[in-house]
Amino acid sequence: MFKTILHMAYQNAFLRKSRAILLVLMIGLSMGTMVGLEGLYDGMSQHMIDKTKRSDCGDVSIFAKKYRLENDIKYHILDADKKVAKLKKLSVVHDAIWRIMSDGLAQTARKSKPARLIGIDLKAEESFGTFSAFLKEGKLDFAKDGVFVGSALAEKLKLHIGSKVIFTTQDSHHEIQSMAFHVKAIVHTTNVVLDQRGLFISRRTLDKSLALKDNTATQIAIMRQDVPSEVLQNDIKKLFPKFDVKRFIELYPQLKQMQALLNVFNEISFFIVMAVVFIGILGVMYVSILDRIREFGILLGIGYAYRYIRFQVVIEALFLGFAGYLLGSVLGLLFLVYLNQYGLDLSIFAAGMSKFGLDNVIYATIKINYFLTTFVAIAIASLLSVSLPLRNIKKLNPIEVIRNIG
Image (cartoon, rainbow, N blue to C red; front, top):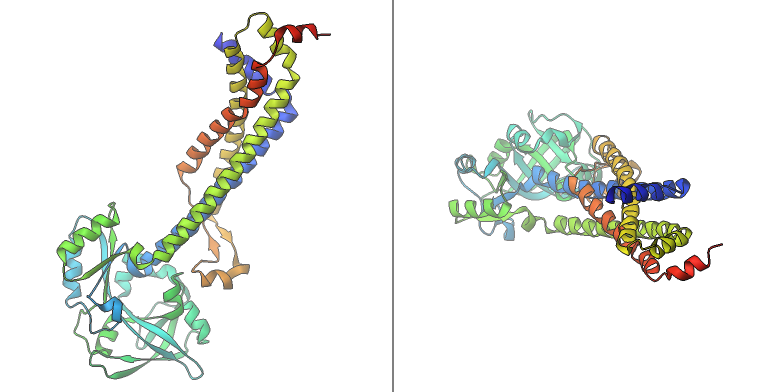
């Protein structure tokens, strides 16, 4: 019996082929677009978070007490190399590095801007966050008096490869120090603070210029293993109770807020598409049932149980919904794979996007839950769409239907 009902449901679902094809195309194109947008939104936020972690704070950062409040290098971490070595022995730590930072003024012959001088070790930065991926122009080489400049700061100061820049700050004895550098590279990290204010030099050079002891740091950044950030933070606090230990979300709450906002856009897009799917299936099923109202009346008149008709109509809606889902899955997957490999080039909006820490090319992420949630949503939309047509069938008077035949 059920096999016969399934066969009839399939035949009736695609009885009007043009109508069914249009509905399947509508569902498929809507779903494919929605899945692509979800991947782009997630890719945009994850890209920003990932690059910020790699270029700056990692999953968790360690600072000396009061450093983040007063931003003064007198609040620093001694023997940073030993502390990093100890951190790397923890099972929850994937990698750790240390940096020295000093705020001051970057100057050229014509302009000056507030800036931050960051002492780094290139080899360690490459291992920690693939620093070479941030290179926009020039060569990553600290030879002699080399400095790497954030892309936005270079634009403001009109710097190019080979330009001379002077940085003025206070050393650990509160004496004014001026350091002259030649630009070796321009880097774009998509971290707004670093791109607008960052100057990267050799860590050893900065130690000497600020009259600090060797292996002194103002920040130790840590990347976690496959554990929650809270677990890593708690373990580090136990190991170094005298320091200020902060998670990424505490250091960059605005990025988490942006991610939450993009999730809201995702949800709005999702509900709009599901509403379109619901209305589409409802319209097709309602017209289909009106076309066959006499057929259903006769079936009820000869004793055919309403539950079998209900089952048949539900299966028809599911056939149409899942046909659209399959088309949408293929289109969405192709869309995501393309955007994941080649990205969406928005170079025409480069000036505006850089201010928000975005790259000119946005890459999408691919997640299985895009397709799982859509599958469930389309199934629910298909089931709900037949509720009104089924009510009309249930109210049918078989005698009147048979009497009106002919």
